[in-house]
Length: 443
Image (cartoon, rainbow, N blue to C red; front, side, top):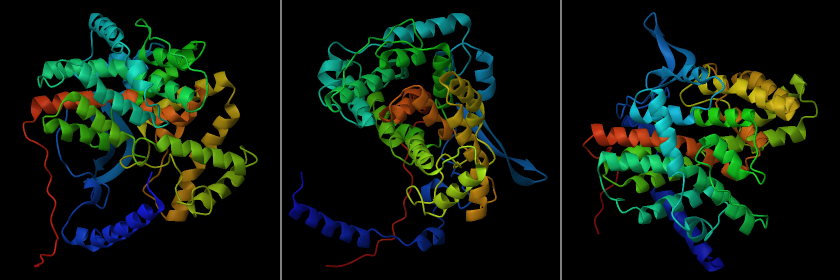
């Protein structure tokens, strides 16, 4: 712990940093530097090529760029079509194969891949006791990251730079991530919250979604609807282009020649940031606040009035944001939210949560209008996938400490695909340029 005197000293040092590290926003415009690698219209600076996924949010009509319903493609297939083709089957492993290998598996290839995932879904002897339980943390993402780095110590080929070895490591981590997440939470829940602890071993014959639900619950029971909704959520969070922060981090660290464990740990550190992977937590906090202040969930006028207070920075966290609304890329609609919503309805009906669903649907309908009027944003604001994902996790009984970890359990697939593509296609370290505006001084 830092003493009071030390705190005062650190505050003095911070004030120096704020003075000497401050760069005028005018200079970014003057030198044509795009903050966050995005131009003033929100378009990302082109930094690479990929054949893994594609995002579409606009099209050219009459030589003009116009916004359109968002589209997300995995390896040439629209995500809506992929999920629709699964029917009632669970498809996380099948779509993972598609993203990693670049083609749809045959029935035999799919079964072999599922078998491999099941066999790899295990941790080294005593790893759960000696590593995960050794330092339990409320921050499950930190716990997982520590475990990922420690797993390297158990791998005799940890530093082998071959593509084949990296692919093996990626498949093992995809298999192990559910264990690192659930066991990490269970250790925290026991040691820090004084609750009962149970460690259920995974079942190699169950899917990723089924294993998560089984390992998380004392009675190990779950319904088909619960497994299907979680499976769909994992598929929709599996990949989202090469430009998101954690995937770009994966590319950057891979380009340096670093090993798979270090690369995935870096991606985890990126994802845990509240500007990236923690959005659904903010949605849940906001929704709880709305429930506390809105008496009638079906009264659209009352809901609209309170949303107005949120945007005016008079309510909730006073930052003026309606969380779960809007996206850096999509404007008219987020394809993941469109697909997910029907599954949310199924689960809400099974759980008897129609009243809460009605509140979400009313906010979904009213928020774009409120934002447009209050902020004069008319390009289009729509709900993103995080708007409903927290609600789904809550209905599934997944604790809030695991929300971002569930994102990681899915996105490890996309990170793995981008790591392999970077290793095969690129031979240069990613090294962007920064312009120095430092004033030269003499002693």
